[in-house]
Length: 353
Image (cartoon, rainbow, N blue to C red; front, top):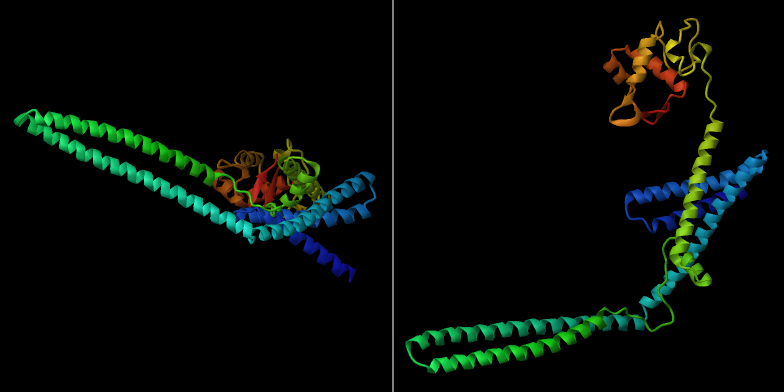
């Protein structure tokens, strides 16, 4: 029963942590990273707690205990934040369903429509002015043509039309100024931040923001600073966990020793001599004779892939490039792996030193 409850709690805590992390995710890669971090943080918290109990060395026990406490603290804070998020979400729903919010939204729409109507009136006034001016200009041109052919009568009419034209522009300037003033007032009213007449305000519901918002109000500290500090805390704990996990993995992985015939320093590697009476434990079948000093040097000098820095070419490719027998290339690759000069990770081989 205890074991079952332990796993139920572990899974529930992991699901809550994952749900918190994905609330801010946007791409599929974000979801993968969130899942990976959740698994590492949750699994590691129980691992280091168990290790702290069983460990005998003081420094290791202290380190494991500290890391376990930090990991559990993240989980605890996440659970509290999840509860705050649910509470804030309910408050936000109450606001969105309230009459005050509905009236505020309706008022905003009315103001937006008022602005739109006023803008349309200004556009129509400008179009009307242009039409009138165009008609007057057309009459002026006609009178000018007739003036040349007849008498002074048209000169007077042209003067009167120009006077009317100037008056029309002056009247329009006053009218458009008044309408622009009205438009500015409407725009400022419509774009102003609306405040719902209620004692409840919109609250954060995603990630760890609900708890950070509460801390910000309780201690009167900028929420941006709190969020930055907490996210930095999570990042540091996560990185320390990853590093310590790697150290533990290295400690628990005991490499098979290389037999004396191939136990060399890096400088002595090219001068290795075969021992045909023994089978080297390097995971590769050796040829009847060990690769020559020149072949080993050639292999090393052609290891690095020019298109991927720090990545070794495959032994078959090196064989094609250098002309060294494929079986000899396999042998050299095995020796270099055992000496720690290269390391196979997945489908790639990394050059270490």
